[in-house]
Image 1: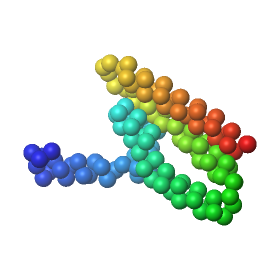
Image 2 (image 1 turned 90 degrees about the vertical axis):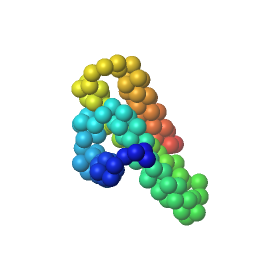
Image 3 (image 1 turned 45 degrees about the horizontal axis):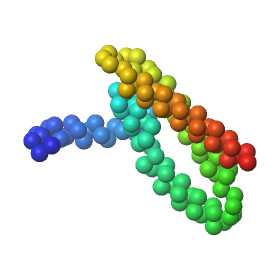
Length: 129
């Protein structure tokens, strides 16, 4: 990293400022990002914001109405599961447009599908029970 020129660093910064914008999510869900960006940033990037906010909301909800966090966590899990299915469609499209070995990419598809199904199952259990 120390050998990068100012223009290269500026290009990296410009690229990073595009993350998590409306256009970026459109590119993510339509498969226009690389498979690695789609899997890692798509699946786990929004959690950097959502998880701390969820902890704060859960704290205040638990203080206001103790023992009633099931619907909150259930709805968040359902939303996260639906979001994972959107990422999954983008991941499959992204993999289809690139060449080369695809074993790890298909493991990423399986992993994303597994997480989506588990989150929706968990959400239904928490929301309904």
